[in-house]
Image 1 (spheres, rainbow, N blue to C red):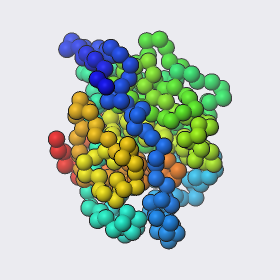
Image 2: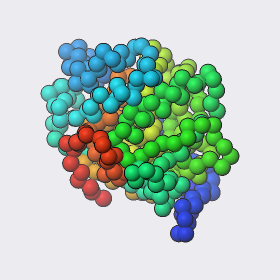
Image 3: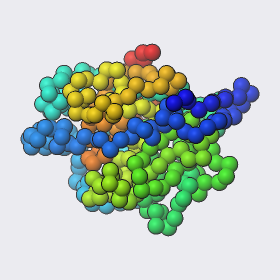
Image 4: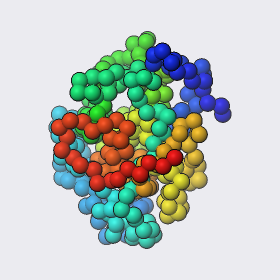
Amino acid sequence: MAPALLIVSTLGSTLLAADAITPERSSKEKDSEVQLRLSEIAGGNAETQAALEIALRLAPKFDVGRAFDEKTLIQQLRDSPPLQAYALKKVTETSLEATPLVKRPRAYVASATIWRTDNSQAKEGPAGRLQIEVCWINPSPATDRAQNLVRASVRGTWEYYGKVSFLGWKKCKEDAVGIKILISDERPWSVYGRYSDPETQSMVLNFTFNDVSMHGCKDRVDLCIHSIAVHEFGHALGLLHEQDSPDTPPACKAKLKPADIQTPAASLIARMLTDWDEVSVMNYCFDIYSQRIQLSDCDVAAYQHFYGKPPGNPYQTACPIILSP
């Protein structure tokens, strides 16, 4: 399928699309139902699964089977430091068939879609923070709490660790720019990065999980709302699926279907910033929906490489950036 016609004005930030969203511009055809659960990663080994749960820092304040407190979620997320893959070396060697884990996990980014003030409708705000508008296409009183959970999840992760602010969060207007979210009972997906700007609908989030492919979320609705929101906003910031990286190890590929590992379109200009990141929130080979709470250290490092580190945030990444074409 040919990619949508894209026009970037040399005099401003006008961005136009000539046809509908294509797979090359979004995760719509890639956000499949295959996210591996911890039990699958552990290969049925209860001891390994328990070790993975401990490594994921599933603190009592995040009881994954219960409702999250939206008013304290932001602080809880900030108190949960990003996950470092090399801290999981022992359990990972067992769970991924003794695949060696190097010390620098890799983040995979569609660099052509990174938001800037000269290529999109993003604005520069106080302290140099990039401001990206967000709106809801079909909000309602029935979805108000879930919408608040999404906003808290984004504030406690991407906003906290990067120099980006997401503004608005109101009902979309006809001339809306930025990220436009449809609430729908289907598989979630997002347009990549700044390609969201010209679309009338650029993200889908599910709050009810009645769709047959989403039934695994029925017993942990709040956690799925949180984890999916963080994952999809990762796409909306320009991050690709980690398993699509050319450095994805055989042990990961063996646990997924061939259709779940795809080569990104050349137009996205995919860049590998570090070594392969097993515990990225963008990686289907490590439970990102049913157990996941925080970003990985290399999610943060890659994000800050493009968007900057916010002033006043004390967290220091340990993940080195090794930019490669």
